[in-house]
Length: 115
Length: 113
Image 1 (cartoon, rainbow over the protein chains, first blue to last red):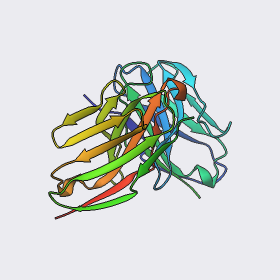
Image 2: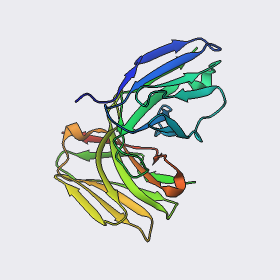
Image 3: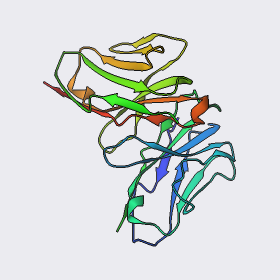
Image 4: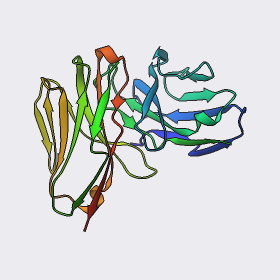
């Protein structure tokens, strides 16, 4: 079946604009994760959904970052009033089961550039 | 929280040689340790994982070892091929780190023909 799909692949925005990044997880996957990957670094956790419930948002860097998964499938990561330090690749991952010890399957990411 | 250290940051080997990448973790409660391969501009791809009740796992040319006492785990690639060239990330997770995978900073592996 299809893997994790993210859109857009590339997004350029001016500082201060709002952006929305979309993630389509693998069909039927219960768990959905968002990560931020800076250039030359490993992914850093942002937030976790189990179905539609956001169980962990401890990695969101500020209240400008907001994520939702209203029907337990597609998820959107929204960043308000973007700043240059928000420039990074935003990765989405999904897992078929709940919990911490399950393989996570990643999408290709959205490369966000803030001018 | 969990802190994962990864070494070396870059590794160059000749085709056919073995490559070893090492990671240490800080949280003794961590119990899941995956390895990801990421080619330039592409998604991290899970290549192998190990849980804390196992000391070693193999999949063809790839193996992972785990030493819980020392809190370190290693990736071993044998008979390397040019297509193994990529950035490799180790990660750790467990109950005390919530739901996050905590990643190392990556190792850039170059396999020269």
